[in-house]
Image 1 (cartoon, rainbow, N blue to C red):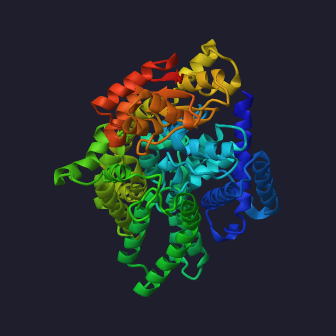
Image 2: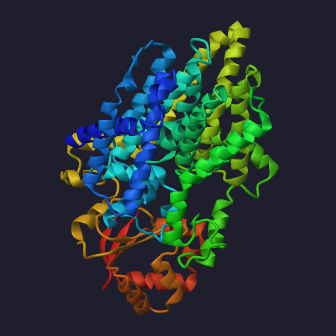
Image 3: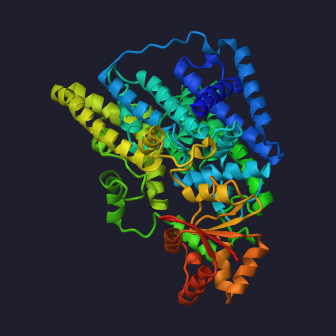
Length: 614
């Protein structure tokens, strides 16, 4: 229980520090809405802490005292900024939709308390920060190309992990989701009549995958919050053109978001197109271009640290992209070809495929990956887009969302990337539903009933998705019944999920080194490992293709200090389907089987084998 209390205290202190440390960027009197002000301050503070952590990693100054120092400094700033909470009061009015929304929040909060076991988190969202911490600072990871993308949110996770708890990254995602919910409801309250201001977030926040992302250590929700907070600052600028401070805040927030995910560049493109096309009072074409240039320069400045870092460590500012222009010794021609094929996920489809894709995302859960569950609620409300009222803000949101959606669909058919478009379109859809309800009383009568039924369907799918990846019910059951084989809290986090890591940590020493073959997960290993992503070369796969004897393979492995192999047959098969560098031909497969026969089997479960080199 103490670990949960400790994580909660750290989360509160982190949020307080973020509110305090951003005091010079946003003042209380600038924004009338209390919720929008506090959430904007929080995400700005998150951004500052992530960049401070970036430079601390670059200077090799990562330790617990750095964490304590930043937390104390931020909280001191909050104490000195006495006006931050002036006039703030909590007013709650119970309603059916509010209670349902609260139920979704409660479910996500429950699942936020379980150990991070999601594949991507263990591969790089948490593994890269862990690598930095173990190395004492910033370091290259040539065998994992994900490690060299801009990782603003991962730097925030790194900072939180310096606080000695693995739960805090998940709580950061949950706090960001709660902040997004609060900020948008506050904004919608000014745009809708009573009763409809909750509808946009009911359409978005109850999407099962959105709930999943608020309870797992992935960067999506904090990054989305930064992007949307920047958009609100941009709307404030459009209302008050003389206050360029809002334009600066827009650039900082969008820069922070883009530094979390390159893919958000398509949303900035959508914002730019919408800004040019929508007629806005006091903004001629020249003034629009000037504003776009200013924002663009600020966004570029926010990306610059990552570009410099990649240039220093990998010789390519945008590594792993454009390796044909910036040749790198860690990147083979075969990798470049495989990588470009993986990126082209949205190309070479027929027109019917493109037309059906937006529908298929909703009607075929898990079809595009084991976390892709969107429900059908949002899809069924899409027709209401055509009944929205005439309003410049609504037109801006529709154009921006549509442009980003189409470009993303052509570039990369990864459903998770479309979530921001859904958020942008949720307000125009809700506005259309309100307009239809006002005109047709029968719709106003039956719409809430249909909405409640669809929300309950989404809730069931959300719980199913959470349970698949958090194993929350299983974790609680084993905790209450004593089902864990070991009671040591140090290992309690991953015992039920990654037993191979638990076995290696207990049986091997820090002098040993494991090469992971057919898997990318390294986060829970407390001994040295060699791990790589599916698109990177693996030492063993390279030796299998270059050496013609078992002795040659063993010599190559021992030269790199490898003492053990963690092998996943299913994982290697999956890797081979994605990238040819992991595919073994007949002779290579025969050599690999002979090689495995020479090793001593120490551990085996459904997915993994741990073998010791002779």
